[in-house]
Length: 431
Ligand code: SF4
Image 1 (tube, helix red, strand yellow):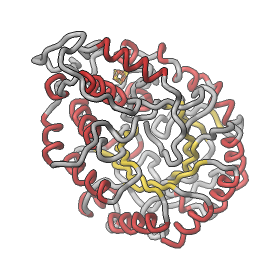
Image 2: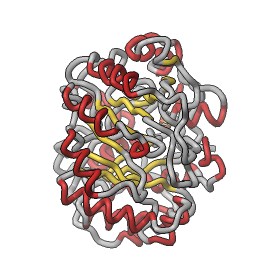
Image 3: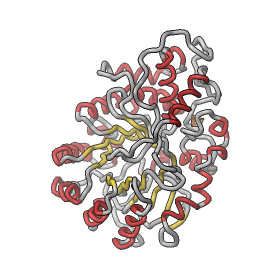
Image 4: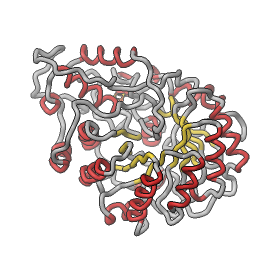
């Protein structure tokens, strides 16, 4: 039984209490172009090689480079294809494995910067990530990077990353990146191992003024299949905690698409002057996380609205050997750059076309009033059920159960009608 609303709360189609000041931001952002025509984010796994052994690794990375990796010339051709989508160009993210394992990384970055692409990269915290190399990359045109931080202290983070000393190297790279002028995003994968450390990580991120804190909700693929995942109820509590933290710090989720539903629900309740704890059935995890967070200077609204993109709809992943996927956690190939262009695969492959049609969604996602702006994690649905259009089992929502449907419909209408968002200069993967 999936339920969202607090059964003890007063329900109705409208609220009688006086509404407070309206939030200024649109609760959701949308790409300012048709996501059926071009992606918002292109993620290129430049290599699978990596010296870490992270417990959740999607790529099941190994220390050596694959002999069939895209060559430098193929990489340049890929960059040309990304640029050919036209302005505003997609954001190109160099990921891995560890991108630093490629000797031509600086060359590829410089080539992409010449084409005026917005660039970012997500290195592994290894001894190769020196201030000198970071400086070279910055000079070549990289201005944004993301670092993984899965614990606020070495014992938690290093256990997760599988190598001792990674926490210290992450902090050193973070300092070096700030000194060089990089914008830094922190990525945290949430599991039972670090669930109650989230408030401490949030405080670190806040104190060090990160650009964005991105929280990743595990998709059980690769080595991540063996990790202890959150239950749907715990996930719901974490998302409400993130909404609160988001009033102090720019937060977002990866493979947690129903965060957009939480944002809309919370916005609707705030506009009605209702306390979310009184309306929504939040659990003890939310209370515990909020208690651990302590007082924080918060605005009345989140500092960042989630971007309405999903696997294959604004988002595309290219593997180390040039295979194109709807996301890095969605192990169903849609084509190969060695046989077709990125434009053709993104626009015309049957998998991508089907993923962009919310009317094809099944289960609760298919019946859900949030489907057009959420749609659930297609990666999780595919990995757990084999059906890319099945419901997202990590979501607790029972379609139609939010008691203020009229307010919600108005919010959705306003959000969709607003001018589409500009591409922020430093947006990394996630929604
Ligand atoms: S049921 Fe599906 S579409 Fe609705 S909020 Fe949950 S994940 Fe999103």
